[in-house]
Image (cartoon, rainbow, N blue to C red; front, side, top):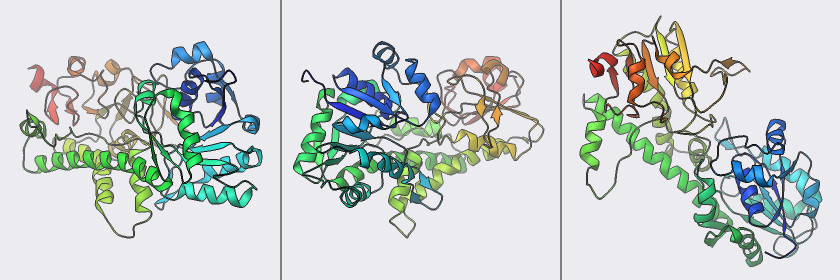
Length: 420
């Protein structure tokens, strides 16, 4: 890097933007973070990571990061990276509200020769929409006066420290200079740059997530088929996968998270017909009900004490966005149990209620949650939910463990069947 580091503004310093901002600062850039979340800003100013992302706690504590609600830093920025949310609306429609809000703030402040990078997951055609917006609302022409690229983030949550530097960085640009400038921005991180068009980058990002979503839907469908025939899915998977060199089948379980659950919709927005992607969505969304029905085949939930273990969307995470665990809790609630106890070891304090409306739920300690529970649903395969939890549970408890977190290789079983 030159003696005078390039100035970068990262708009949206959540789970995508903050690790990138810190990695760029570590690589020699002068970085400013912009976000509207007061709690997040307060944590970063206190040099504390506001969420779990291994490897960044020490970096933030040592180097800090300049953050603000205001967009003043954009006026001097050589590069602006946008990492705000792009959720789906309720009618299978990409919600660009946050992107549009950022453009409203950035475009009047955008200096000549600056680079604008989209990094959030976006629907096909979104980068072209931004290009048209730039050309329409400013006197700057993309490719000559200002530069634009879509450089998708493809990092697994919890692995950003490593994957920012090893995963090839896709650079989607329509002109040579925009592609060169974008590659130059990410070059200090050390990852290989792969160049393509706007659309190529948009589809590559979506295809990565959609293919995983469908892959896990197959596993979940096979679990249901095995149960229909009275077979043990975990035994069948062992037979399928043991020393077999092709097409390893994943273990079944909740398939969720902010990317996997929405990205199929960004493709389906352009399709008027049912397809494989929509079917995968239905299968994965059905799994919580499938688990409740499996339990009901053994005994009634009405009037029972129920423990739900795990509330985040995946193993080892502290992120509850688009988790299927709240849906499981709501479905259990329809059976009118005496009590539902939720245990999430990766989150401190009370949990946001599965019913929403600003309510909270107690976050039970594991031993308290399972002590005299009649049902134990393992919703997330956290390390804490291994076989040892059975010694804490009542002997009559029915365990529902699609993940095989306990290693019992049975979707449902009573504790006394295992402990004797």
